[in-house]
Length: 413
Image 1 (cartoon, rainbow, N blue to C red):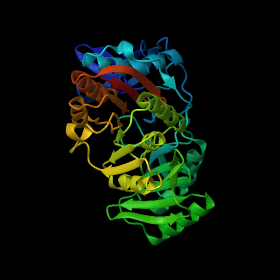
Image 2: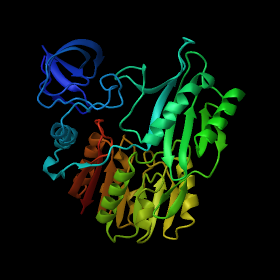
Image 3: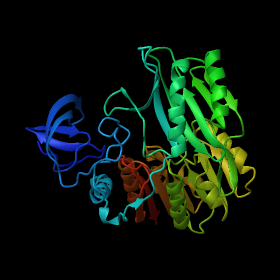
Image 4: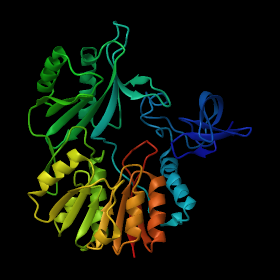
């Protein structure tokens, strides 16, 4: 069969008789032999067993794990085809809800450097094997034991490689866990999400590990809760000159360069409109930057993030903080009436109920930030139906070589 295009999940799409096949690591124009495997919505996953002829947009990937590791999906595309593929899923999502995709600005690309990454850990049952650390295979639970990763900042990769020999001490044979590595403004932070509470030898080994590799903190998370293993200095990030405590495993934008670009775009779109709402505020990525020019009210549902925001806001007279689950309990139109502008940056599920409330409000400017074209398009259609027009839509490629895309949409009445 011949691969026709790349789908929104990053897999090649081909048709065999009346069946749609999703073929990872293929490119448009590839002529392949493939074996259907597991059923998938509206089709079937497939495994390529032979490349008969390569499409014109295929290039050699830069990582030797590519083709097995599920961390990247698009390394094998030429630069031009890669940019087009990244934007194609967004355009399709917009068309489905009746938005003209011509509004999309050229793709903004940033350097490949992720400062936050989650990796799987496995202690093989074969006692002669050392620990495994890496990403899952595409469509499978098996881990690819990585030796390189071009998307990770070098310090994070070095930390992951150093952690591998400790895995047999942290897990029983056959045990699985997850490690979240983050570079904060205090240094490297390590969160271990484990099936059980830690044994004493593991704690002792991790304390020594933290000293040898200059980690700021290690936290062991299990069903019993978070156990601080060691904290060598306060762990924080700095936004607009404000220091914010960093909860273990908290979300920050994976690319520091992309975060700066997003903040610039949001700040320019809001302009001088105050007071402004920062909804799904996280750790104040946008809120503290906006507070430099006037009153900002930040609303966040996660209890640890909201507490960190509230503590940091004590040092910023223009910022106020509210803990509220906006997915279940959105701010209603009457509460929104006090604000001239609103920014929202929800999880991948989007902001369906909050977008409906904004559409019925008197807010004049809304800036929507999203990492999911499908839910962005749904929420954008809601705002437009409520009387907004979309003025600008910027796509930022901070999830390099993945099918994911960061978006900033500017809506005005």
